[in-house]
Length: 196
Image (tube, rainbow, N blue to C red; front, side, top):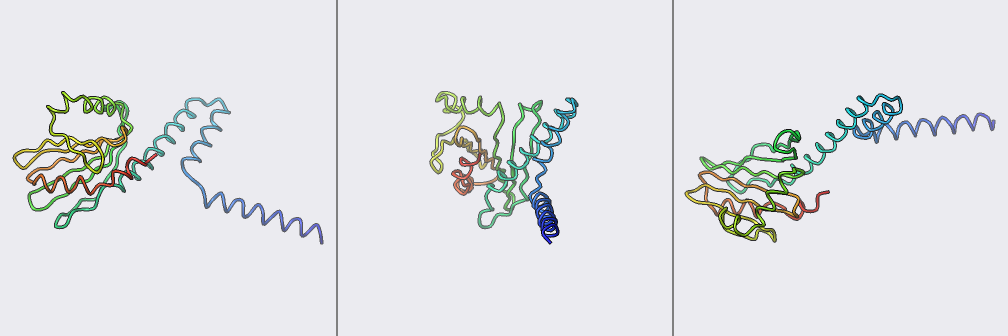
């Protein structure tokens, strides 16, 4: 009787353990586990490839989180589905971009959020330089963050630096400065700055 109880308990433990593992399986952790196994087997090339793949999966998850922070369209506007992409290091220094296009009749606004790019830091430094910033456009404080607005003849852009880690860019064509500013103010910059 005790023996049967022990086997039943062992079965429940093993079943629930494998069930929990299946329920919480994560492709990132699975890929890292695979890399560890390959490393232990001295399969260094595949271990490095698996770690690169895991790192790409992590960036994709971060991109999805970034994409969710692209704003809904303003009243009277429509939006295409947002997308996020990871740029290879060989292209523009690499990085992560989430972007979405909005339109109303002939007017278009493109919004992009860029992070994790080595070039981003040099751009932020240039934007912090008053001489460069003055030639690039007009200073504006947008929801508590530094922005530079360059707009004329119904077209232009707004660039906002968030937490020195993100660059939010809005580019408008055949639109008004008011609409472009309204889009900028509709972006949850606080949520962007709180992203890991």
